[in-house]
Image (cartoon, rainbow, N blue to C red):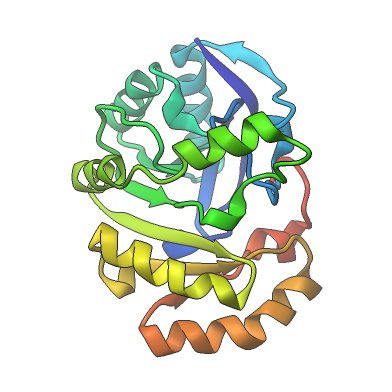
Length: 233
């Protein structure tokens, strides 16, 4: 059984598969607490119901038949904290579906996905210690297991590494993590923090040129532009 906040058919809004019709399975629960989390209903206040792996596979197959959609995205929350995600990923791929896993890379699972979409969290991502002392401590302890992230990258068919960058003083840390992971610049996507088109446009003015200088890909958040910041997108 897996706790599921929502399932929905939409278009991928981030990274190399932007615009691709995809069936999203958003698992409910996370071992981090990013202050900018845009899905609190799968993290800070997890909601949803428990589903069997078989139920989720049947939903994905139905979506592939009715929506011309062969791509499945396992997201969260943090999907890799749940052991049953190994079985889910294996079953989906055995049905010929392309599986993307969106993860912060803080937990190891013995699985192979078609695309690992790894999103390491910067040191500024944690909640305010004065408001959430326990979660601020846990977040910092858990957010950057580089060895685990490398293992996940090695096990995947393909990978992309996405960073949420809020301020220009976070760029040096981003470069350090890219170096520690040993990933090629072309595999790195830099995404502005923001949940409105206006905030994304403002960030792009300084963030896009920085990406160009380092050979990184700029990652707009197209689902916000298409649908707004809301569940089911």
